[in-house]
Length: 170
Image 1 (spheres, rainbow, N blue to C red):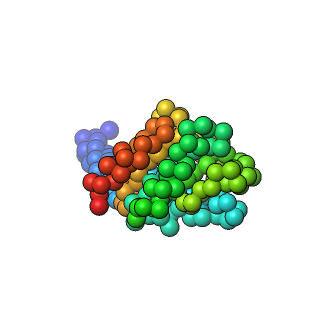
Image 2: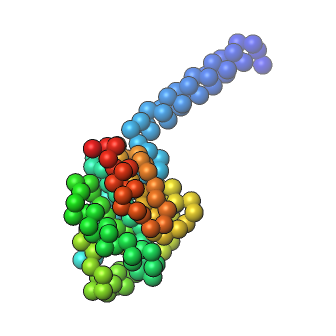
């Protein structure tokens, strides 16, 4: 192989590497890898209609992952109802459960904020993609208007801590 061919191969490879890097960094601009899949999803509400999550993009969003069989989840719902009534921030509950179980559960403990449902595997995977590396419920995450994850709470969320975290954004 001649030196010219070798030099040409090195130049072409270098240009390909640089252009690939630039394309990759520009294509990720303005997105958070943790929440990018979230805003492409549609989840079932309690009326059994699909709700596109991208309708919440551009707002501060508090997502609370829970299940009907989870005692701390059940305990925090009345507090989250009160939080929802007194805030301008969007709050949605994501039940990792069967939709019919969640509908029945509402008779026992009403939920006043929007509630969406995912099956076990998809719900756990979504929570993990948003930073629930521990796999615990309840799990609450705050997502900024640009889609980035702002804060996470493992276990029963303490409303004063949630308010404190959100006070920095208002």
